[in-house]
Amino acid sequence: MPGYYQSVWPCECGGPRRQKTAAGDGLNLQPGEKLRATTRERPGRWPVMFVQRDTGELYLQGGAEPFQPDESFGWLEKVDPGSLEPLASSPKLPSGGHNWCGAVVAHENGDLYVTNGNYCHRLTPDCEVVAERKLPIDCAYNGLLILSDGNLIMKDIQLSEPSHFSVLEPEKLEEVDRFEFPDNSVGRICIDVTSDGEFVYATSDTNVYRLRYAEGKLELEDGWIGDYDLPGADQSFAWDTCVGDDSVWFMDMGAAVGALAILTPRPVGSVPPSLHETASGPQHVFRMSIADASNRDALSPFGLPNGGIVAPPLFDQDSQVLVAYDSNNGKLGGWRYGGPGDLSALWAKDIRNFQQPMLFVETRELIVDDVQEDGDYVVVLDLETGDERGRVHSGAAQSSGMFFCPGWDRDVYYATLFGQIARIYVG
Image (tube, rainbow, N blue to C red; front, side, top):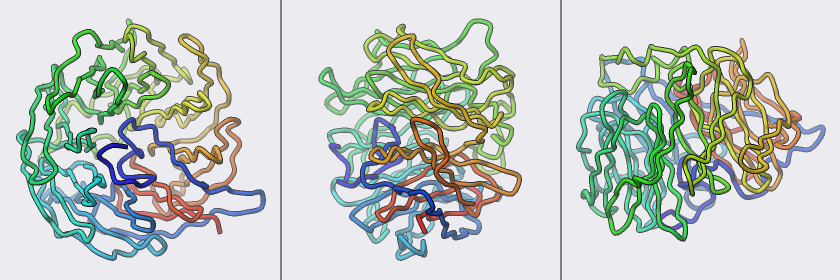
């Protein structure tokens, strides 16, 4: 991937298309084998995501514990892949007084970049700060990706006001471009590089927009705006988008999870009341063609009222399998995509997934979580059949819609905002 360090998992969701698929041997869990977990607590901190750099180089990014109203900061750790103990740590990084789950990327230049709150930092592989940039909008920024020319792109998260994109060059983090989005935007972006150009997709409360990036500039593609506002439906906003099989995939009902007030992007000490508002309709998953946004499918996968999620679906373009879920109602399922208008059910499970799912493409192992009364379990399912291959308690009391990351030795890494991290491995 141009701009990224050549590793299997250099950024959130594994790459800018946000497909959440990982190459390699996977867990390759066999009958009779068991999953085990090594867990570690990060008291007072919010672990967000792991990324890989070189083989055996694992980094953990996060922020301040959201339950502490008087403190906000970002941080980066290089951690031991087996014990999860820190090998190197950054100082507390300023975040402008905003608590939110930022992001980290491993750049092709070898350094790591972290966005947290309204700051972006460049750090060495030993977690030493090289450059710092305060971002222009006094609001938390959501996500961080690299464009094909090596520049960084990030967007503030807004509930009602228009969002803004910032493009920074990677050396001194100087601003290359700033673009005012035509609407508010909550979810993270994805990027697709095609023969027609480089495109950035982002959701608002009712639409998906596409921006074209060329020669350091962003501009709105007026001819591609996708409407996901369903007549008569009681919906709430969509979170992240992902790209697969020449389509954009995403889910609505982003404001309907009961614990979402905890995740509120906010200045310290304030909570926007709009995130307490919920919708009562069912969960929907959407597909929009990148050639024509009006070429749209809308599926209500479970048909249950009061649906809700905090993370996007997974679409595997190799097998044409879509994985969608309803965190509020504890449902998860798979569908085969046969072309526009053709989504046939494969399987459904009573699993309460909150995390961003992940797929090992070689072994067809789907990694999700399942929140039960006694805590959060990491579960391995067969992508095609939904059959459960294994599960293990993560060590966390609850989940939070954070990210998985593949390992190197039949393992996968897990993080939750409640302070727990885990290595899940075949024992």
